[in-house]
Image (cartoon, rainbow, N blue to C red; front, top):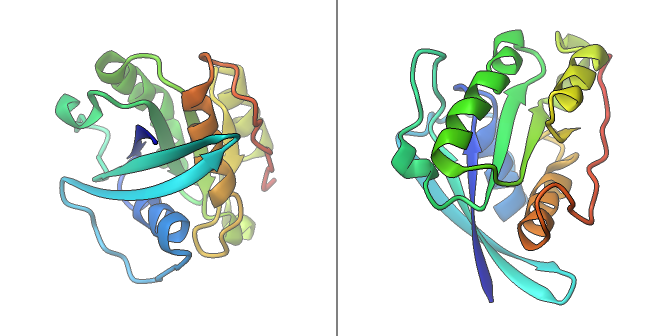
Length: 179
């Protein structure tokens, strides 16, 4: 079995823990629990003929002034960036966050989960913003930890991307825009 480390990063309260909980346990809780440090979960997924054990590093949310400890990012095979579609500042931090992550983990496969799609009527992130992310080199899809929409797609995309050459995963994310 192949083991791959996947780091979840983003500012606080974007739904990183909820996405992991939905993916690993197929559950959602509306209660907010702030992650302190890092919480590690695991889930096995089948990618073609390979069984992949994903080690999911749910890293505590950061404010723009804080950097993620490099020790959390070292050895990552993939990164799931999480932003909240209802909070513009979480979206705006993605490029600087990516620069920091790349300096610590290298240029590993990554995808943005634009989360809280179940609240799309309250989104402040537009389709144009999504196109800017894609134009800036990000892969992106919309997710909802509450409904489960896009969650499995995001993690399976990352699992597949860790087994293929950089920038050429065989599974492409489906991009949905709220506006």
